[in-house]
Image (cartoon, rainbow, N blue to C red; front, side, top):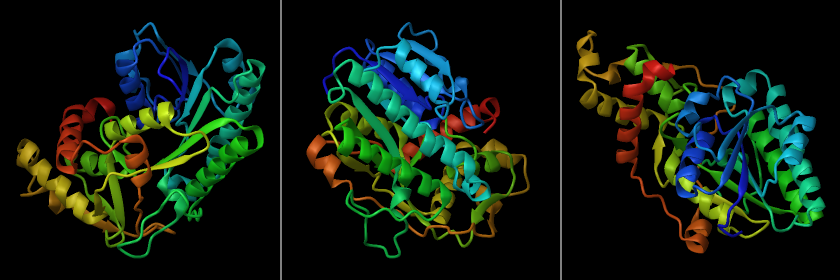
Length: 345
């Protein structure tokens, strides 16, 4: 892929990572035409892209990727040179409660995009030149049971919940279009993202919203489940490199190099909140936000540990995360402390 003028279809661009990516790409590539296709479910909000709404090269399209006619019309009406596919149902708890929306969006929606892109790009004779970048997750690999193993791009998929199963299914469909149709696809799988604009259902926004509301901070089980944390802007830089420079048909893992238990991460955030929001503590009869930590019943099938080996993107594309966890968490706490009432996290 080159960095020439492009029209990029970003799916799920009103969500957390998608909206951060749109801000990133609009600033770095001002000549790019950006189409944001989003259903605007509970997890997406146009306030996330408010700052780019007046950009003449930005267009929002409300629609459901599970609707093939709509997706096909988008390709018919625009000369799309690349797809960056974020749109997904992504909350594990919701998938345990009802898996059907995850199948419709994550599986059917993905194949709709693949088929519409294939048909459009074949007609233009550019199926192998135009790029389809599928955004996946490290959860497709399953769970690590010790402190030293890591997932590589060759690790067999072993999803443990309906969400990760739907993402693994989508990955396999993307791979099939590469092998069967020689479509120019890439897949990236990242560790847990954090940063501005994340929905309140996720761990760090939940910690912040509960703490700032002086409500109990719920921690599943004993809090010893381990996740690797990646600042969203570092993820966006990785996606930029993979989309433009990644080898066709390849998969890339993206890690943050910050493995923490859920409990230790919560304590770390509480200590930052103590320092940055003493006025909130003054309103309550507690001396520290840590006093709000409450253990709740573990969720079914809770994976113990995720960790990705991301040497491939580091060595082949020269990427590494720039944001330390301390700096990233402080930036995130500051953003939510200022915005939490307005964005209703």
